[in-house]
Length: 625
Image: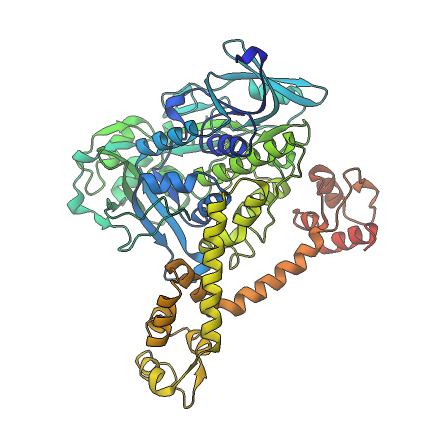
């Protein structure tokens, strides 16, 4: 079979985190898929930091895994350290994060993709798109090939007209050592798309043998590490590599300031917007001038390599300034650089031009995922890739789109934010963006999503059975605790030890376990409870589910009720042909925003910036409500 006589179901352009998840999802749903990438050696390359997860991002990785994506499995197989962040806070804030072996991460991704049925690969650069009658029908490559497809997913990352900056120097590139991609932006603009420019940066990579770790603060992984994937085929780490923490100083800041006149960020050469929540070191010094130091996280790039990532020192300052300043950081006095930090500008397309399934509004069968939509981060990209891959395959198969609401997943929050609100700076996920974060915890992603994914044919029967067993076990334990009465003489010593008020007569254990002072593990070790857990083979994951329900059932129920109220508005559809300009009783701004976004439901309309509650009331009247 050759490209000249094949029409693929799905072509994925780009082999980063979005492209890799998109290709895996569409192929696993039975769509004949082609992944085109500039370099097969750099599939799912960790272009920036060698880590997956973190605040809110860890929840996204667990959701990807619960849906049947690959990111969680690859992370577990290649992790060198695991941490559960925010464990001192409530479970809605718990966020898993893993350091990965960068080289093994990319290798594992490629090998998993190669073992995926229905997936072909081709190394080339796409420099044009083929359109017919308002639909995309294929792509053109630099070699001159025209490859046909029923759907196309663009996951170009930072490669679209990418421009790298180091001091006064600038050169085309999608990332260090790789050329930029040209032609796609121009084709899209020609057909009516709006585009913009964004900027991101990366810190220097240095030789770990030249650092003095004894002068830094060690940051080990968790004593009892967990993992990302719900599958038993991956196991928690038994050994880990430490990260380290160092600090900048006023002297470091002064040295960095000497290069500001040659900084592309300050001299006007970079005009695009960078990530607010992951700023360059020069931006931090400028914006937070009163701070005399900033944290640097010294992260190993793998088990065996000596390469180290200096997290927190992203910069596009000239090489000599980077060198002098970093040498003044304690522990970095004799640092040797593997490569200097740089900034990169690239094209993106405001995501308000997309539908909820990530298909473009202007061109049928064309999907965007990842940084092309204005996001930043591997996890946000991978989530979009997964959803685009699912929906491209479903569209080819004439099946309904697979959509996730804001109350079902962080992925739903991410996509709804992008297409409803748009973004003018690189979008990063935070727990604060989710109004239902008590429901959207990292521990219950499988309970929320695996059945939905199984029903469309993506999540495996093994995943469904594991989730069902976990849910059954947790409900069994909760029911037992609700019915079990505990005597004062058994529980009072524990209550006294934890400065909790003692009881005078037998009480249901559920009420005792719900007290904030009482550790659930102590309850689980009571003889009758421990015997019940043992007899019913209740897993640690099921125990965690039971603990969270017991401790937070009131909050969870309240949030569910709030979500149900809002979700009723999701069922009130707005016709695609509806003319918002006829609504003279709403503000001009609201009419303009509604016309541009074209919300499909009243709930989506209510989330558009500039649309007030009174505007929504008018819409409800027009919808017959």
